[in-house]
Structure formats: C-alpha cells, structure tokens
Amino acid sequence: MRLIVPMYHRASAGRYGNAPDVLDAHFAHIARSFHGVMPGESLDPERVNVCLTFDDGTRDFRDVVYPLLRKHRLRAVLAVPLGFLQDGPRNAQAYCSWADLEEMIGEGVVSVAAHGFTHRRLDIGTTDLHAEIAVPQTVLAARLGSAVESFVLPYGRFTDDVLAEARRHYRYIFRIGGADNTGWDGPLIYRVDADAMTAPDALFARGNLLSYRLRRRWNVVRRR
Image (cartoon, rainbow, N blue to C red; front, side):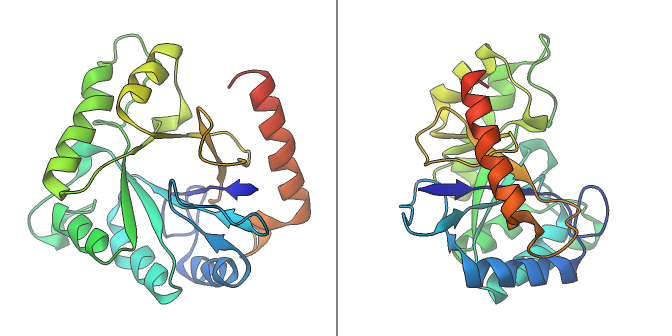
C-alpha cells in the first residue's frame, strides 16, 4: 500500500503557496485519480492513497481552500498553532477563528491537528515542550469537542525528546520528509512539499513518485 501526504500552506501563488486556480485543478486531479483518506482510515491496496494537509490555519484556508475541498468532495487535515487562532470580526483576522474550525469540522471536511502553541522550532533547548505539544491538544479538544490525535511538527524539526513528548499525546506525528508512506503505523508520517506546483498533476509525476519511495527508504535507514 502507498500513502502520499502533500503539505500545503497558502492559497496564493508563491514559494509557500499555490494560486486558487492551480489548487482547483489539482484537487480535481486528486478526486479523479486517487483515494482520499484521513489519519487512521483504511488504505486502498490497489490505489495511491492521498491525505491532504495544510499548515498554519491562515484565513485563506477558510475563504479559498475550504470551498474548493467541498466542491471536489475532498477532506484535509488543518494544522493550527493554538496561539494563532482568533475570535472577533472576520475582516480583521489573519487566521481562522474558532467558529471557522467548528464549521469546517461540523461539515466533515476538516480534521484539526495541533501545530504547536507559538509555531516555534521544537528542537531548540529552551522550548517548553509541554506548552508547545501537550497544551494545544488539551485546549483544542475541549474547545472543539472532538479528539485531536495528530501533531504536525513545526518546520519539521525535532529531537528524541520532542518525539517522546509528542508520542505521549498523539497517535499520528507528521513531519516534512519528502517521502511516501506504507501506512499509518510508522513512528513518523512523511509529507511531500506541494507548494509552488508547476502543474496540477506535477506532484504525482512518475519521477516524483519514484523519488518519494527512495527517500522513504533513506529516511528509514538513517532513522529520521
């Protein structure tokens, strides 16, 4: 079985995003060609399984990405740093509000993952790992009324202590790794960079699929 987890950020053209029309065509390609899954769901052994993940919870996710997901009947994991969530008038917000998350979860389109409290690197010795890893799970679950089983490592950085703390609280731990996966049971779930795509189907070109598989093997060998 094969599981690919694309990593996206903004719904705008640039190094850390894709223009809305590119995302629209990209999602159409995924809906036609692959089996969409969320963390822990059964994988199709006959098809490539794809789990979409978006980082940071910026407002353009709610305004642009969420409608596109609904249009193509897709779902996504939204990784949110707890300290970035906002309340108040939407026209003043740079990030999703609690009400946005409640709506998107309620529609069955989004699963929320913790992404730290302040989105700081966790591999720096002065970082309070309890505050950045454990607290977001507790607060998100209580406020949203649903379990939070996924943690997305900010910047993909970690140490053995970071992983140990994350594993105490979360079932699924995502990192950047440029690799595919064979299932949900690994100690880390690798993601591939899907920002700045050159074409809607570029992520799944034959050469890229091969490179993801080779990179997975290399990551396993070096235990990263």
